[in-house]
Length: 260
Image (cartoon, rainbow, N blue to C red; front, side, top):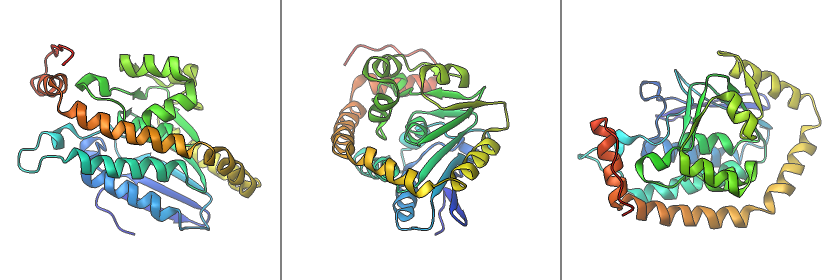
């Protein structure tokens, strides 16, 4: 499989998916969202792959949704089409019949953070910048961000994190239970590879079976949350607060929200 915005490499029972828009800090435009969904769905058919590593090329894992693409007057982002692909992406990730490991360096924000949280194991460098920062431009988390946050830290803390949009480093995220391991700068992918090797030297087939048992029970809830995220995101994209947030971002000023 060949893609414009990512790469997939297979090495025996291990596969590596790399987000590959380094010039944009792997910000996700409509093409990347669709390609990640397609890649994860394709991996469902790769029965010989038992561990998947996900990482970002360049300075970051992913800066989240591509705001420049949202504002492109020549090719405006169709939010309803995008949300279909985001829904596909999240469901394919959660139901993958393999162990998924996120290797995080630099920023993992917005949809990028949702992708990270959807992995079975998250390894982040200590100076990473992890943020569910949709609120900064008047949007709600998508990519099952609500679902993945609730699974990892529960509803009260999930709400606080969503509403604040707080940026966390690796140690802060570990303390909250958002990630599983902190590493020194430049070591996340090395540790991810070591972790993958340990899984592959274990009875990983049984581990994947346990994952399937635990996750299958929650797929209906995941689908419900994804539908709510899609409808809410479409509504928020038309809100005055979102338009103000986007304009303030472009003008590099503090937004003035009115709750509308």
